[in-house]
Length: 162
Image (cartoon, rainbow, N blue to C red; front, side, top):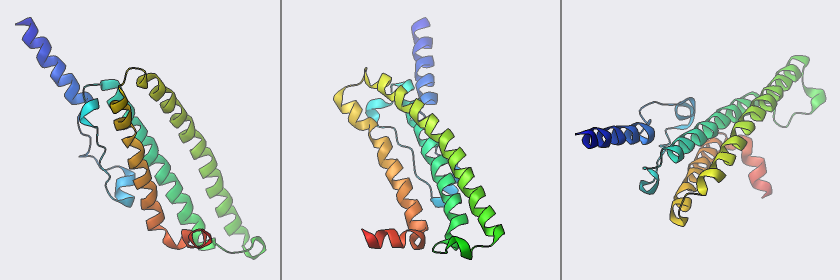
């Protein structure tokens, strides 16, 4: 009987740890479209890895929203010379730059902590599980592509140079 209860509790713990939080739309999902956080089958029985994947995706989404907000503020002023900006526009751009600087510093600190955690977690993973863990970055690329698609005009000049 105790074994059955323990088995049931273990299954419930794994379901909660690696369960899908995809029913909640994040700010990034609302801005760019939903991107599902997928946890590969080989990692579903590793609660700490599941937690890492979810944390990393929250960080990526937070960065995407911050980056998008700065682009939205800066886009109307793209290509203008500083001397052609009004005092109010300069303040608006400086405020957006400061918000990005402070926000990205905090996000990068979280990212760094997550990467340190990843290095610890990888010690107990097989080569195949490590490859599956890399899929976290596939979602990051997709999220960043959503930003460039959303702001094609802003990135147009950069793309033309490449």
